[in-house]
Length: 167
Image 1 (cartoon, rainbow, N blue to C red):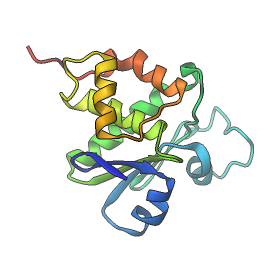
Image 2: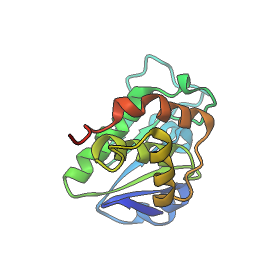
Image 3: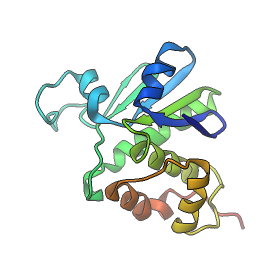
Image 4: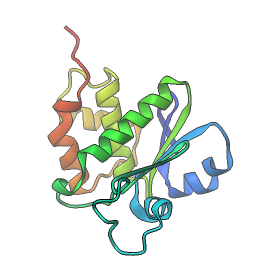
């Protein structure tokens, strides 16, 4: 688990299960379908019915569970899922709470969302290209190894998420 911004920690499933789960004062984004989104909704089929109101995002108190899997095609990464995670993180950090953003391995989904949080809510990468910002993010979180779909999603939406540039 690495704190990449004050209060924002990125990690993997074991960071949650072995550490954060047993502590108070944390908000958690589970950026993985298995086992958290499935567990929250209790579906047994491979897919949750699309008409379910929490098909993409389920909130249970201080936890947000995303129906998010690593795909090679960014078209299968729902933007509203990433947007919900960014809003949840921003709400928590603005309230002075600690956040753990994790996926199963802590390499693709959670660090990509953390990267996009920094793009959207800080000026950290305000003057950089996507490639420059991504290289700098790797210094903050060396375990960043996004799957093709997550990386391409971030690249496609980089300018859209980017915080206003300084004049």
